[in-house]
Structure formats: C-alpha cells, structure tokens
Length: 269
Image (cartoon, rainbow, N blue to C red; front, side):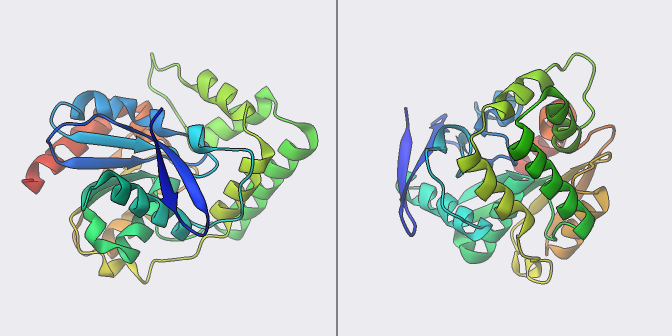
C-alpha cells in the first residue's frame, strides 16, 4: 500500500493513490467523514488525461490510526504540501470538497506555489454559525453516549451527502463506513471542523484560477457561502448544481464533471 511519510510536529504516514502518467497533476482532498474514494466519478473521466492523486486525511480512511493529536486545517494544509514534496510534485491543480476545500484554501494561502489552480466543491471560507456548532456538538455527544445507529447515520447523510439522483445507491455504504469510525479519530476531526478560523478576509490573496461548484440544496454549507467564496477569490467562476446537496461531486457526478472538465481544459497546462 502506498504511504507517504510526511513531517509535521510528528511524523505522519499518509495513505494516497496515484494514477501516474505524464499529464498535469490533480490532487483531490475529500470531505469530513469521507475518504479518497469519494472522487471515483471524477477519476473515471480525468485519469486518462491527468495524473490524479487522492489521499486520506488525518483521522480518515487508511491514514487513520490508533491515536490522533488535536490538529487544525493548517496542519492538514501542511500535510498536503508535504505529500506533494514526497511525490516530487512542485505544483498541482488542487481539488477540495467541503473539509478538503478548507485545507485546500489554506494550502493556497500558506504555500501558493503548490497550487496552479483550484476546484472548490461545496465548501466555504467562513465558519459554522453558533446553531450549526450546537447541532454538530449534539450529534457528537449522541454518538459518544449512545453509539452509532442507523438513525444517526441517516441524519448525517442528510447533512453531508444530501439528495441523490435516481439510481445512485451509495448512502448505505457511507453509513456503514461511518459506523466503523473510532472515537480516537472522530473527536479531533470534529474539533478541527467546528473550531476552524474564518479566512474570508484573506482569500483575495489567492490569485490562481478557481472553479467554485456548489449544490443548490446544500444543508451543511449554504449555496450563498459558495457564492461568497467565489466573489472573494481573485479569479473564480461559480457553478451551481441543481438538485444536489453537500456531496454534489458524488451524487451528481455528471453535472459536476461537466463543469470541471472544461475548466481544466481552459487552463492550458
């Protein structure tokens, strides 16, 4: 299995997958409670022309271990930069969904040379409202106190997956996936999510071309937050995905890919 040893305050083994090839490099960063596999619909259409790298973040997927110290999304941004260094990639198109977008924006701010362009999916530069924080803390408390349940899984799915197209049946898989999450990874990941800082005033410094894609029915990050993100970036295009919720790239891949493919083509790499 391919692991990259990335140096932060401690050494961290990050699991990644790399399609290889000589095309422009795209690095995909997944959302909260998800993993690298959520981008399979994008790899299906892009891997022939691009070198596609997916990875599992701290506390997620095959990077998750038996312990996880407190961290923030600047640490995660440094993990992304460190992964690129290990792989010998000087600059890449950075794709981030939700949490993956949080760290991607911070990577573009702290290590601008690493990003040649950005694709930001169902994410924002701002922070949760007090009501959202309270709701998430309540969900975590219920999870810890009573354990994971199908009802809790359905509630989480409504927030971080959202409406699905007919014929898409991935929600049961993700609910089962969440049920196996260990508290040692869950609690620090929750803390990073709800305590992140507001970088709205800083994103104007990001000058790389950007595509902001957002589900029209997103319950976790309202579409207005995606519009504000696009407006705050120096050179961004905004695309709304009708009928999609928070994981639009997973549940409505044809519509999302129809935005990503021409955007990448215009970059002229």
